[in-house]
Amino acid sequence: MTAEVVIGTAIFQTILSVLIAIFSLYRYKQRDRLMILIGLLFAFSALFNLMQFSALVFATNLVMNAIGSAYEIVFFVIASLIYNSATNNRFRRAILLLATVFVVGGIVNLIFSPTGLASVTKLASNLIVIVYCIVYFFQLMRDLPTIHVHRLRMFWINSAFLLYSAGTVFLFAFIQYVIDVHTEKVGILWVTNLSLFIIHQLIIMVAVVYDLRRLDAVNVNLKDEF
Image (cartoon, rainbow, N blue to C red; front, side):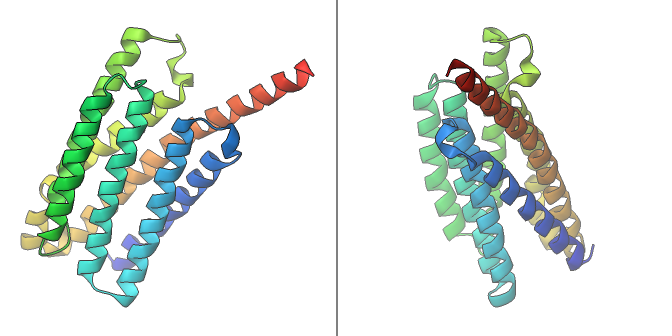
């Protein structure tokens, strides 16, 4: 796997993050907390990617890996806020406790990682997000706010998070082994991870489209009232 393929995939993923951020924060005063958090998540995704590109040119692999590990902490915090909002604060204390422990553990893992790659942080993030996803689906099936669950934005967002987290949990469980023993295959691992993230982004885009349609419907109703 050539470096050009890895970089090209990362650039495409960054472009998608920018687009999701723009469309999620478009008319932000009319958007609810869920979509604003999604917009911020992908804005940070694009920002940290750009920082990694800069580190690739002007710094070392250690710095580039550290930036990626720092993003994982940001990702988890925003994901926790998303699921707290989606579950209407039902599990606020548990989520707050998990987020606090995770941030502290993630910072410690990052500081003491000789390569700057906090694989334990990434693995823990994926596992906890999988739990978030399962709990949300359980709540959704129990409450069943609509028979057309595919029209719910959070249904698509949750599906995207579950797919990405479940897929990458296996990748990062063995990343250190791949780095130490099969260095030549590290590129394949990163392209696979980026490809899963791109699929994750495309599914998120479905939720963004549904939300834009919702905004248009609200605006039409307001015009009809006047």
